Image (tube, rainbow, N blue to C red; front, side, top):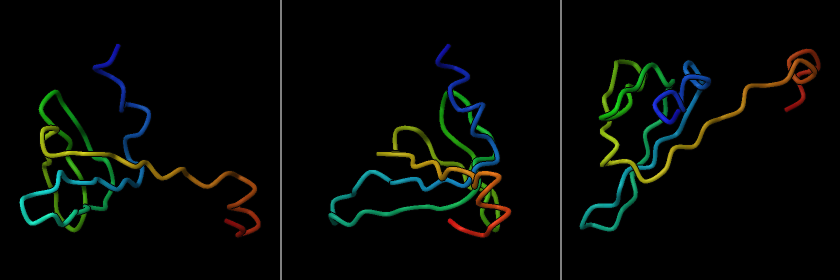
Length: 75
């Protein structure tokens, strides 16, 4: 059941928070969730970027606008 957890979110805009390094700075990657497997995710930016799950602290999935928001332009 967990193996298809992200299937509903393919082609959604996401923000990936990378595990902090020794410098203490937190890095993020933004893009479209293109694909995933047991080892990590494939993020589509200007190019395809593979991020292993061991390097991911958090994934934030942006909700798509509702029909009303698309019609009225209100976010």
